[in-house]
Length: 475
Image (cartoon, rainbow, N blue to C red; front, side, top):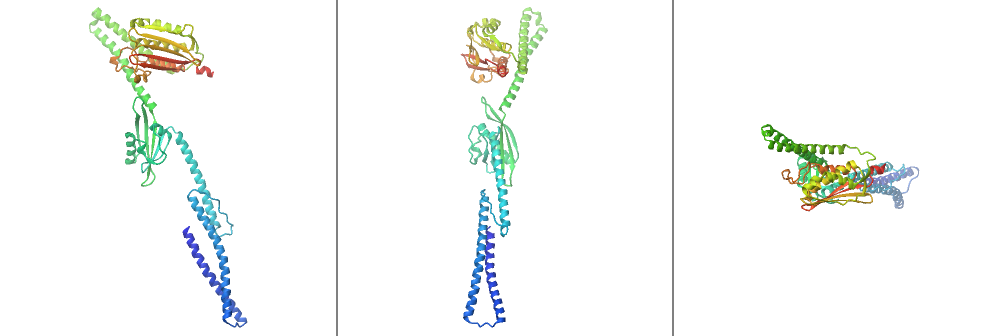
C-alpha cells in the first residue's frame, strides 16, 4: 500500500505539470489565432492579463483535479485500513464504489478477499471448536509439544491420568511429566525423529495404573516440529492379562499337586509298599483325599464356567426361608464345626423370608459358612445375621478367625488367590475358588459382597441383594 501511495504522489506531480503545460499551450494557440484576425497591441497590461488568465485557469483545473485525487486517496486509505483490519481478523463493511470509479475493480477484489478470509476464519474457528470438543471428551490423554519442548495443547483425560492440573499457557512439558519412562519416550522421539510406543506403569501396586504411551513425530518445516503424546489407559486390560496368567499358573499348580501326590504314592505302592497293610491303608487314604481334592477343584472350575455362561432366566425369584437354608448347610458342615470346637450363633429369625434365587443363594451360603469355619481359630465363634431394608436385604457371616490383611482384601475374590504368603505355609486346604464363585453368583443376582477384616481378629462377609431383581422390575 505504501508503494501505491508513492505511485499516486508521482502521478499527482505529473498531472500538475501537464495541466500547466496544457494551459500555456492553449493560451498560445488562442493568441496565434487572434493575432491572425486582428493585430494585438502588446503591453504590460495585456501580458499581465494573459498571465492572470493562465494562472486562473490552472488554479481551477488544479482544484478540480485535486478534489478528484483527494476523493480517490480517501478510497485508497479506506482500502488500506480495511486490509490492515483483515490482517488482524477484523472484518469491516464492504467498500462500495460506482462502476465508473477507476478504483471499482480494486475495491471489488478487496471485498472478495475479505469475504473469502471471513469464511475461512469462520471455518477455522468452527473446526477449532470441534477439535477442542473432541479433545475434551476423548478418553485418550493427548498432549501436543512443539520444537521448543513447550506444551501447546492438552486435554482433561491427560490431566486425569497424570493426576495433575495442566496450565493452558505454554510451558515446558517437564513441569507436567516427571516420570522418567515418559520423558525418555518423548526425548527418544525428538532424537530419532521416529514415532515411539511403550507400555508404562504410572502407579505401582496396590493402585496399579498402566498406560500405553504413543508419540507421533510431525515435521512442519526444517527447523520446526511437533510431538503428539497419547496415553491410553490399559489398566483393566493389563489386570485381566495378569489375572489370566495367574489363573493359568495357579490352575496348573493346583492340578499338579494332587496329581503328583496320587502318582507318587501309587508308584510307591506298586514298588512294594502295598505288601505292608498299615502303609497300604495310609497311602490309600492319602490317594483318596488327593483324588477328592482334584474332584473339588474341577467341580469349582466347572461351576465358575457355568455361572459365566448362564443366561439369567425369568421367574427365578422365590420366597426363601433363610434360617432353613442356613440350618441345612450348618448340618452338612457339623463335622468340621465339631473338629474346630466352634460356637455357631445363628441369629436369623425362623420367620424371616427373603426373595432370592435358591439355586444361586445356596452355594453362596455354603461357601461363606465353609470359609468362616475353616479359617476360624479353635473354640472360636461364627455369627450369622440377616436384616431386611426397603430395597435390599443383607446377610452377614462373622467369624473370629485368622483374618485377612488390607492388601489381601483387594484380591481375595480372584480365582485361586490365597491370602497366605505362600502355598507351603497354607493353614487350610482348599481350591482357592470359593470366594470367586460367591462373587460371581452374587453379581448374577445383581447384588454386592463386602469384606471387613483384621488380622488376628476375624472377618465379616456382608452380602447385599435386591428385594426385587432388576430384570423382574423391568419386566
